[in-house]
Each structure stands twice: as structure tokens, then as C-alpha cells.
Image (cartoon, rainbow, N blue to C red; front, side, top):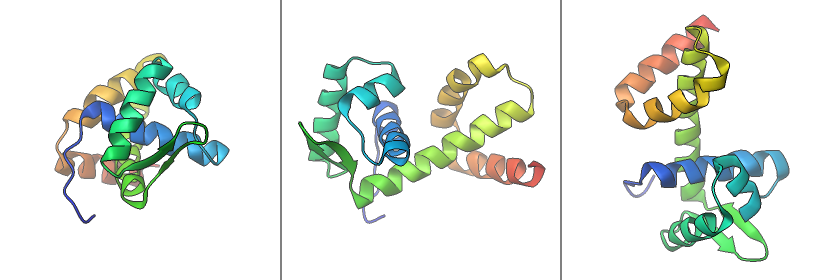
Amino acid sequence: MGRRWVLSKRAEDYLRAILEVARGKGYARVKDVADVLNVKPPSVVEMLRKLDALGLVEYRRRDGVVLTEEGAKIAEVVKDRHDAVVALLRMIGVAENVIEEEAHVMEHELRPETILLIKRFVTRKQ
């Protein structure tokens, strides 16, 4: 990555949500992102405008949103981190109905070195 980004947890969540929706549908709309994050569409529009101003997404009101190359790189890192934590929580028997909530807390608070160790651990055990 060209720049060193310091994004809010919420901004990271939006990038990951856009990535996941776009992978499934080929594109993402405001309503799709709102549904994934369980937020209201006006909140999505506000964040998309911010991310667009940062050059991480291209947001067009009628066409929806796509990640820029830089936004996609960040979203991949965030998704990778999230997936590793989810895998660990499943492995240790955390109840399925709380895994996402727990992962959300952990993925934003753990150091990158710890996430790397989690990724290595879950990869060996799968």
C-alpha cells in the first residue's frame, strides 16, 4: 500500500462489507451495505462519501459503490483478519450466535502480530 492508513473501526467494517457484498453480487448498493452492517441507509451514504473522499471507494448515487484498488487492498486485510478470528472462535467452541459479535470486538483490538499468530494456528488446524 502506498499510504499508511489509520481508519476507524467503522470505516474498516464498511470496506469489508462492500468487499463481501460485491464478491457475492458483483456490485454493492447502499441497501446491501446497510443490511450487512445493520445500519440505516443514510448512515451508509455518509460513510461512503467519506471513503470516496479518501479515495478508497468510488460512490455514485445511482450506481452504488465499488472499492478502489487501495480500498480493496485494505478491505482484504480487514476481511482476512476477521476470518481468522472467526475461525479461531469456532475452533474453541464459541456459540455460533455470538461469534460475529465477539470477532468484531477482537479483530479491531488485537495487535497485527497476534492476528498473524491466530492465522497461522487456524491454518494448521484446518
